Length: 335
Image (tube, rainbow, N blue to C red; front, side, top):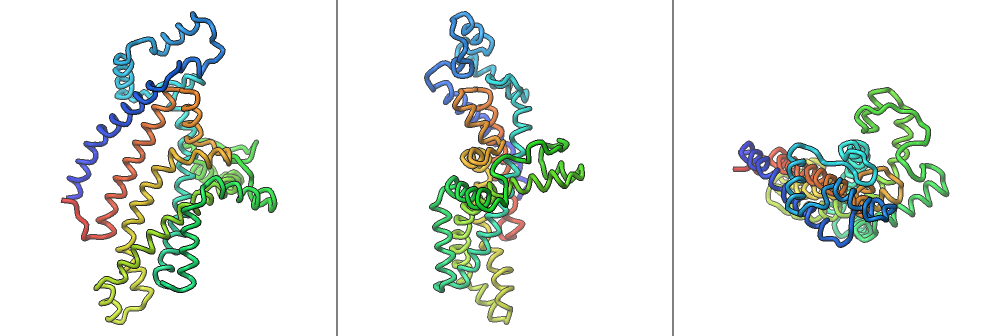
């Protein structure tokens, strides 16, 4: 039953988070060097360094540090940034929504383009349209995000002036923060000027990621559709006189979409922590940039807390994907 499967997955969720937190804790402390020197280079005297180590608990045995880390984690305390002194909960409130918005819009773009292109390629197999779609898919898989991002900036921002170069919203544009999800906040407050500015800033980074991911989706959709179109029930549907459009989109695509959903679920989790390059290129104030800065500065709380939250969302997204399977295809039932 789906309920039993859901309960089992929720039981394993704390175990997965504990494993991620432990591995992150160990990996950070295996890196040679003193984190205090990385986050506060102005501390040159031994006395100031010793006080800082004591303040952050880094002078204690590794087992005591690990126990304190797990204790704080159980209480929901992710810590305070060693660099800025800001609680990580506040930093995540500021940085996570922009990344989630970017990932969701990029997924919508990649799914829409990739699925349509894959279906067209499968239906027009061995024709020039099929060859064109496969070429697009190979280019999308091969070309990195940052190259597409830079080309788009040069064409659409610098030469044509259609979109802003970087940032999340126009500098000085007033807006009220409620959830820190810009789309939701602008709709709730009726700030359509800020919403328009945000969407214009979001377009290029979302397209840069979406077009790259669309190549994966198109290839997977084409492969799955070719297998399904050769199935007996598809031939039976056609023999009954159903129109090709209904056969392709209702009977075939519905059964071929399962691998695409799996891919996009994994892709969403990867985008939360992996869109660092795109966020750097477009100066997007997301969690990817914060995580990279934390790693470079060896800011333990920032790295540990960010990875744990990203892992939590990643696991929940995969759980949601698994629960969608029996809704799309009733033959798939968990026992």
